[in-house]
Image 1 (spheres, rainbow, N blue to C red):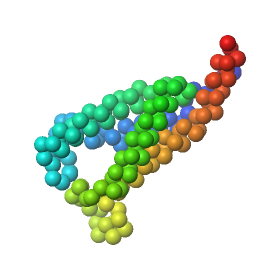
Image 2 (cartoon, rainbow, N blue to C red):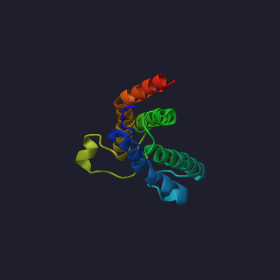
Image 3 (cartoon, helix red, strand yellow):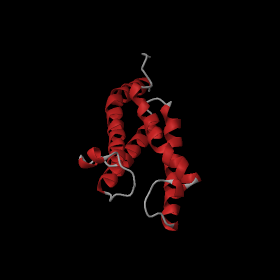
Image 4 (tube, rainbow, N blue to C red):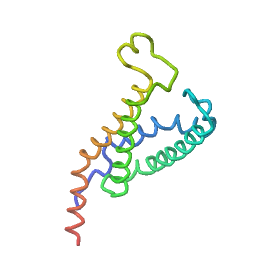
Length: 152
């Protein structure tokens, strides 16, 4: 059996997903009222905690999948799910009204660089990163599939 690289360098995208989401997970679970969002009420605090729990679970899954070989269907399925999550978050954040009462200054504001848009761009880049990971690892998956077919 020939030697196949089991982990591609682009697998770091799983860790970048964690890096982007973990601050909101931690803050959202412990003190969601401390998040810099406008108009927080009891309902929104409950939804923030629910979102933080869901995002925390996805971070745990991403951490566990990071070290797995690229060709495993579970890792590939998680990557598709995380890609859809991130591009959806990106779209939501770009279309959201201002809800973060911070600014990067008048020049950034005039260029449309609001915290919501920057956060949306970061989510979009992670979603795109999962698409790049997928394409970069298709050959590994195909090679493993061919090796499994030959061994049967």
